[in-house]
Length: 553
Image (cartoon, rainbow, N blue to C red; front, top):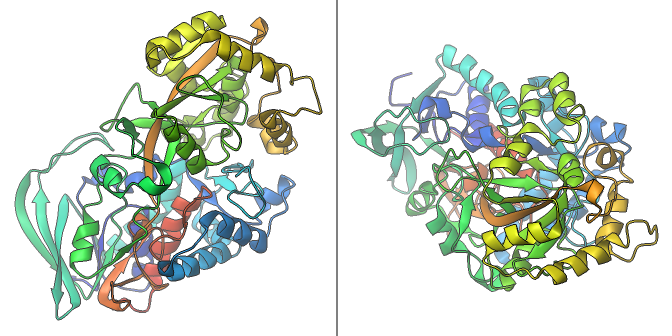
């Protein structure tokens, strides 16, 4: 293979790009993979993930007593997606194809590749409204042993094998700025060679140009990710009609390199973005006390017991409960006129229910060691995991106090004096009065009891109900929660062969897209809402489709 020609060019070395390149290599295709970041960034955003995958009717589910099926998963997906646009033709087809994959070939294929999963399946995005609305009816979130790095290692191993066979070249610090088109057909890409940068993985790197490059291939596959690290693009795309004005104060749940730069470049070449106003941002973000990238935030993955209050100390109404309806809760928070909210909880809750998103925040799962999981989560006494305790001790958004008066004083110091202690106390006392009542009328207490009916939640994710204001359950903890940017749900429109589709509805010859830049398939296979585990899963599935596409020259 010459240095600047191949059968296919993959723009982006994240999970979708690696999946596509690995499949192309399996077919004997010669591939050049370009990435603007250094070699030690290989794997992109997926490296930082918890490694959760949405899979259906798996052995892990069955061992936990979960009865799932492709029909139920598809019903949940469609109830969450709420497809309602003419442009949703291909997103709907991708959604149907992914659910079929998740209920069929996905697990055995990944298992044969070497992936393994934590035996307790997580129950994410529970919805909290009607059966035909948003949410997972059953737990489907399968955490990969090794988290994000544990997902990536198997694809990277395949890539390395193809490099050894002279089928794949990896070119780092190659920033694509132009897709070369000839008579409406892709012929290659050009751009700038950037200076080396020793920044730690995920950190902001320089954009110093040291030269230019051109590479040529009859197929160009764009797998460059979304826009979550680019606040300007997030605000420009923000769905004001559905969520209100975008926050001025946000934290970034993804690295700086998730910048969206290939989206307009692909549009200029003939690609077409649909559903750009559909996005997925979290409401439980906290500022990282030890940041890696600019405005670095971490998402709290909460169990169901923390009480959720708006900035003025008013309890959020159901289904705005922890872990139930992400975008519904985001909308209600922004309606208050403030951009943040509060969790109020106890040490017993933080010990059992708080997890932090990300591979680096879960060293026990990332290690793949049962010994570490037991040490961190079972044998830690009254303490939460070490990363959670570090945030509690050092995080600027955490308040820890022995009395409610002290807690409110700390909250008002962080939030500008909006909390009235007597009002907050009355709401917590009302909630506490329902703890010993098996016939509770409090929707959150009912949700807690329902969660504990699931063996996995009772074992590791839901604290036994207790009175928050009882001194022996303390200390009390409050957490100031920020909006945290994360995923682009819309994107470049593609057919099931991952070919880009132009604004005229026709295939753009030689152009392909996969992963988040394609809305994880079709230009937005989630519709309006995600069911979690569908981001990594979508990168794997759409990258695989692109790599297996017979349309690739």
